[in-house]
Amino acid sequence: MKMLRVWAPLVLCLGMTGGVVAQETAAAAGNAGGDAAWMNDMAARHAELIKRNGAGTDAALREKLVAMYASDQEARGAGTGQQAYTAKTAEVDGQLTRELKEIVARHGWPTIAMVGIDASNDAMNLLVHSPDHAWQRSLVPRLERLAKEGKIDGSELAILVDKELVSEHKLQRYGTQFKFVDGKMAMDAVEDPEGLDARRAMVFLMPIKAYEGMLEQMYHLKVSDTVVTPK
Image 1 (cartoon, rainbow, N blue to C red):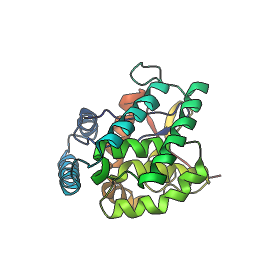
Image 2 (cartoon, helix red, strand yellow):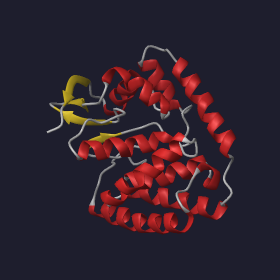
Image 3 (cartoon, one colour):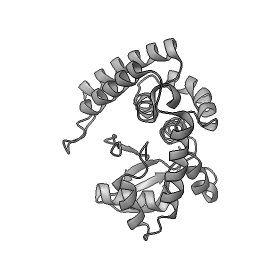
Image 4 (cartoon, rainbow, N blue to C red):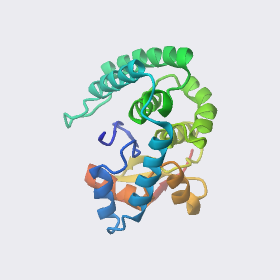
């Protein structure tokens, strides 16, 4: 079971990945008032996704992606309590992007059926961290189709979609992007706020209030009612 993946010294780009029944979701449920019905529903849907696709048929590629993700996390100081984006991180991101491009060119996008859900999510996480934004954007339509078909986990893709929308000064879709504003955390504005939780559920993300509670616990800062509008 993987831990929650976090990186971003300036912008919070957080999403629940593969193991939705990890302790982070339990803590988030507690922060949301103990209503864990969404956890049970999400876990059931997630288990069905794994059952439908299997454990992956390409063991060598799975191991390579897992190792690449480990390099990504090491470059970010994961597990040290001092996560930061440095020149070394940028260098590793560039190298991992080149390796991921080679994989996609040779095998297509690593689906759950190809490499298993954890390695498939590792590939998406590497893409989220890629400095090649044009390549990221070019892959989004294909990845959205794969997510809709249940061939990949949509949670990491949601983060990528939101990052690209915010970078283009547009409304984000899934509410994954927050900024530090005046000593608090503020969410970048979203399209159709009333439908936000429904969209989040579709891509295996927890309800926004539970998510905000998790952020507050992780960063020891309050989530502001302020919404950061595109400029």
